[in-house]
Amino acid sequence: MNIAILHFSARSSGNCAAIAHQLRQLHSGAEIALYPVAALDISPCCGCNCQCFTRAEACPHAHDDVRRIYQAIMDADLAYFILPNYADQPPALYFAFNERSNCFFQGNEALLNAYLAVPKRFIIVSNRPTPAFDALPQYHTAEGATPKLLYLPPRRYCRSSLDGTMMEAEEARELLRTFVHE
Image (cartoon, rainbow, N blue to C red; front, side, top):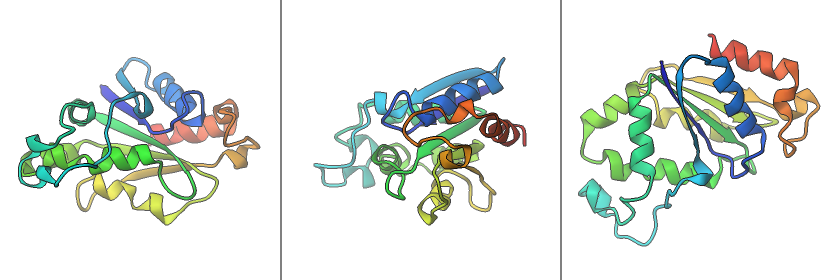
């Protein structure tokens, strides 16, 4: 099995990175590609005239990492998206990744459908569910598919959202293990 894991935290030693590490352990034997999005070169949409809406290759940022990451997800059998809650919203890294999909899929419905067909699971590090996160899967899963979404609240495990220790709590690891094996 080929698995792509993307974590969208700007912090390399936070809970999202710890969850990614735990996922690698839970999928031992699988071929895993880990993408800490903060370490990638993904430009946000800006400084253009929306050229990608007419021709995907016309995006002025077309040579950053976004195409490589979308392709890696399409080559995977399963993809995980791990997102922290920043002020009740996904982080800016996620928005940049998401909005740049135009320069990859624009005008190529077959490519988009192939991407949407890859099973994806979403792990949200948040002390409370928010509507902003509940809507995330709709952009990454086929219409009518039931996406798998897990909220992992650090406070529930007596952990700080900032110290990156949530996966040290057995209850958190067990919840993640159950989610992986559903």
